[in-house]
Length: 103
Image (cartoon, rainbow, N blue to C red; front, side, top):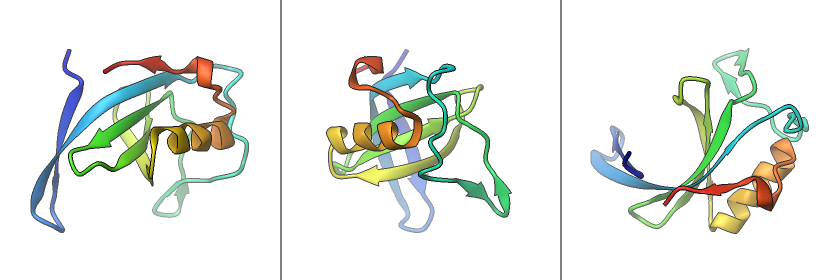
């Protein structure tokens, strides 16, 4: 299993590599807090099955929401891993000890 993923940014025309750093599988005690709601078009997205923190080749940190098939539902940019972890806590009550290192 590789800890890297590639994404082609059509707007910029650049291939970006992402390193998978941390992951948490959301369980019954990780419920949406209501602090953030994500939409696809006008449809409210369901609760993700897992979250990942990834680092892009340009240094950006992303909190990735994954569905039950491991497909990305959405993401948010953060300045640091710690900031992404705080956002996961704000959105789903994820604690520091819930995360697993995958890099």
